[in-house]
Length: 270
Image (cartoon, rainbow, N blue to C red; front, top):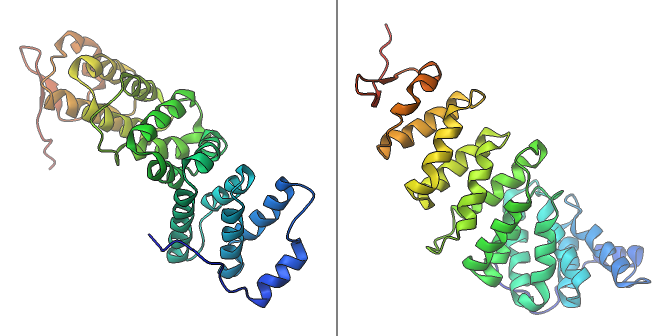
């Protein structure tokens, strides 16, 4: 984290020029915020200009201004160190504003399903409100997401990926249910991450049936079927009742023995 700005930074002549160009106010709070956002989101502009816009929005502290601050999360600066520093500074400023001012704009930002980049916003929410509130928010966002939305894969992966970072042991049943829903996602990467989380959080009773059903689908990729078969072996699930359906779908190396137990033997190649 970088130190919080307590006093207004020195203004360069170029910053002063932009103030004259855009104006320091406007006919409305929304128009003023838009002008600051244009300065904040100019990735090829001088960092002093972005910092000045960042500070101005923070000082204003209105819902429009906080929403403007969040726009810095929507792009990556070409220099990774600059990008990380500025985004961390945004999180720091949001934390200084507190949940009363920052939480609602932050939730509105996360709820925008056209917004693919939510990873930093999730970190900001966790900083403001803690793990439990962030977990509840992610569950709600995933409940609203669509497994058939191929364009939303990056957003879903970031939402699901943040769950890996949480250490809370209080897992709501709704989380298991929504992760099971995404076993039918169009993106194999989403399915793969859901399988790993369901193994981590779910009991055998909660995940055995959906895992086996997914494995039996002909359209399930070999990568996902192999991943589920690893779970079947690790958890010692009996799937012999599905032998007739499974035998033609099994990846190389997997087979049923005479007692209908699923086995695996490393393939040998000449």
